[in-house]
Image (cartoon, rainbow, N blue to C red; front, side, top):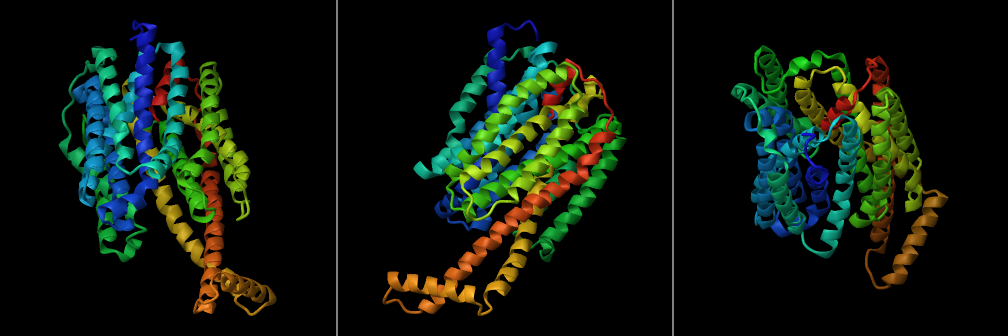
Length: 520
């Protein structure tokens, strides 16, 4: 594809990167709109969470199959179909008048969105010749970091000023433009393909196994985990389905997911590291906004603005890292410092308290941004370093799936951990203050007199005083629990850290740096 002129290459780059950002924004933009959506659709907060769950399940099912689907239909056709499906589903999400309508269309949107990410990268890196591919990979990595960060910011702006359907309608003009540009500028040569045999049994087993696992991870906390018969049954289905899927795929000559490539030592280890990166990336984006909004009183828009500078730092770093890899710098160096930076982020965040200002978070978030920049392209370069060109698409798909599953496991584990720690911290705080001591008496009198001045004729001032103090206790308990969560996530990085040093140190070519970008 190197015969393309410069303008065409720039248009292809903008198309593929913007389509990927659009998909990634949609993974987080809905989070800030759940309250408004629940009210408009007459659903409870627990039920409206299905809007997130259905999208995540569709994403994680389709991602490992993208290599097969692109080969079967042709990469350009499959890419354009993914954009069209995503865009049409966005329209119907906005038009939905009931909970289950929007859940259905979010699932369809997730099927389209899951196909966009890997195919976007694949098209982008085949468009650029060898020496330009490292920079292209870095540019794509910038979009990967920017997308999830922009979601809460854009969502907050829309919810504060408009109504929730706009968070879906905003995709439509971008989808239309991306479809037109794809049809006009992406060469038909991307549709050259040899149709593999359809592994229907593999597709079925992957769907039920991964789908059930994703449901357990997304909804386990809401269903009280194994107090729910549904969660128990779905866990059994996930385990049996995935074990059977692995057994079946290893027997097939043309499997839907080629698991044999995991015999490559670097790929196997790097998928574990990618899992941890997904764990940290998604949990930090999950915990940090909750802490700011639930405890410190930030709006969704203010939270997004707080996250934005660190993302911009990642954008600045990534092109330099891409060039350094092409120049022969070992990716293990970047990955090592990237993991150290993420550990530093967790430790610094654990030092916060209820009195911190937004300025406190600037340094930790900058360290996080630098850490992610040092991980995105280098880590995936390590994964594909030993693969044959024909195996790279499957390696890409597995890496994407592992990052997504790492995020799902991370959010499920951290959510459960925070709930557990809140209960412990509340008991500790209560035992320290409700003891008739001088500090409690002074605090009680201060709150009581304040309420009496504001509500001189109100009844039950004593009960209201206790409620105010209880609210303060819960606020502190949540704050301490979120700080614990940052340290808990840091522990996972520490445990995975030695894996970096047992990967094989291979020189990365320009083509392999380019392929690394596809693993995002």
